[in-house]
Length: 340
Image 1 (cartoon, rainbow, N blue to C red):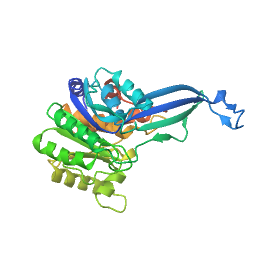
Image 2: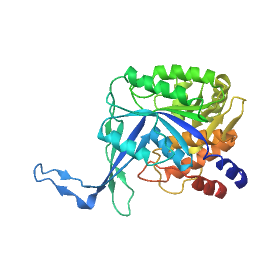
Image 3: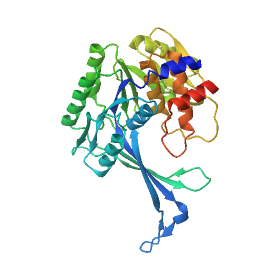
């Protein structure tokens, strides 16, 4: 992509209005200094001392972090937190950014805050080592009252935003923000706002989703396509093109070191190779970075290939950020794309 074209597109990023509907959780990193290890007098077991606690939005919040890095000035999270300490931390982390509008992010005593607690061993000169996570989740269906708040929020926001990102992060269906009721309502939003860009991603797969733009990894796409074995690149391109035509929306498939395939409703299919590795990598958050960058680029008027190139560069930047769920700024992306 030529530098002037890239600059033209990225200048259109800040005024965009983006809604993020999904499971916004708390990523809480416990930074452990092994040089301060002790033995408990009471239990005679090793003690790891936490020297720093770093909290940031995770899950769908990772998409918000990436939107902020791209300079988006109006971001509307739609989701919930519990009336607990983790919820306080999450709301405080979101509220530090003036561009994040919390009008549709609800606090409720009917849910606990979805939290990933990540103990991280840090030693000078060495790559951080993440220990077993401690997760806080909801194990019961999302109450109808909470679902109702979510549905009302999406209906209110649909005519106000340039794009909507839908992210299902939970492992158990019906326990998070994205429920059957929400998907049924999204179908009506598509009918009433046919030009609204909606991009969906789900760790449990996108089977049963309405006709919105879909982003999947290779394994998820194979399941979606009904294949019992991994799909070859040619098959992925063909089936993505067919799905895009049938849905009338974009389809994206990430292929790790092979890059990313994108298909448009008009029959266009593009493969953008992954950029070369530049050292050690950590893939945490790369998928959400791709989702955020694809959405913003398309909302700004990028072509299919341009959106893929921007998202591929952003993912390359993020996977080289170790020990954190990273982001890619416009400046980072421009430098990498122009260099490559």
